Length: 104
Image (tube, rainbow, N blue to C red; front, side, top):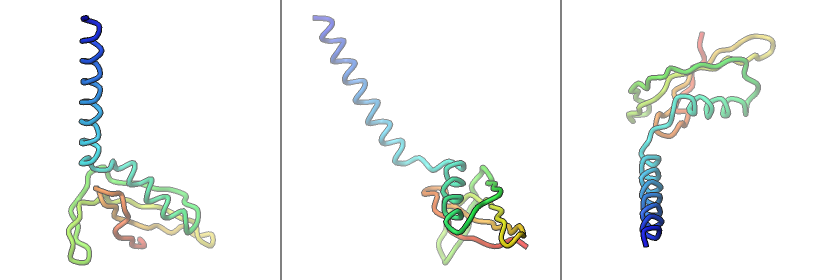
């Protein structure tokens, strides 16, 4: 009889842990590393990248009248033998690139 209770308790604990993880994942923000990965994938559609960076702490920005909590990062690309640097902002919640500016 006690082994049945143990199996049932383990099953209930597993189900509760699984549901808790699903809820946490739903509300968790994206990591800076994932945001950089998504941004690099976006930039690679236009050509190769030779370097990249991202700040680990999100900062508030405003774009088109909307407020975002975003990571600031950058990529370097070689175009026609010259290195061009671009800075971007990636949404801290979704990882989507919000804005891109060519650095001088």
